[in-house]
Length: 232
Image (cartoon, rainbow, N blue to C red; front, side, top):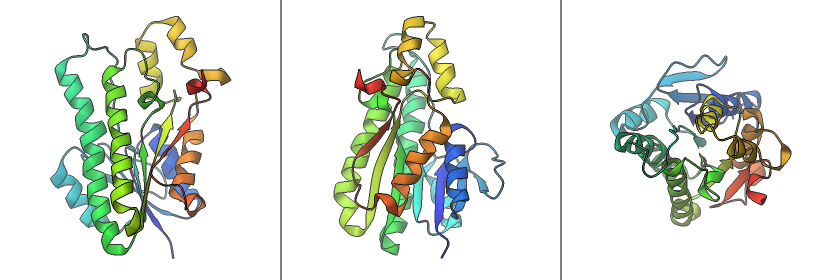
């Protein structure tokens, strides 16, 4: 029987690579994004994950899912003093509330169906922090609490949940953010020990592992995929 995966924020970058990876491995793939998604063989839906009612509507339309990849996220570079309050609020709306809304809707259905798997896209910034990314670091740290709490509360109901924590990746958001810092030393340090940023397809491999039966005893934890950045 074909399994179904729902990917949020799948229009480009890591999310798009995740959609392609699951599709190529025989999954029925549904992607939610605020814009149209043009991935062949993938069902696209316009959904605002910050809107709880919109999430509930869309989840009812999708029906039961086996895997959720809660990937939608945004960023804006800045420190404690330079980040506007409205930018802080926007990051929390998408990166925290959006994941909360999506996971909540998915878990309710998974409990009824007897189980499921969730992968949350966090960041190595939750552990080591990125300069000039204070709010982003905060939001990704909050996701680790969501993962651990949900793992404790729903593991015995057949639901696995883990986080993938990428380092700097070749996406529009990732490279734009690092360039905005205009700090050559920070830029070099951001590439970790391998001397290059990660590729979306490399992060997708880790997401697929956590979402597949290959990781059946991995629960309530994080997989850091950062080219050695956090080993410094």
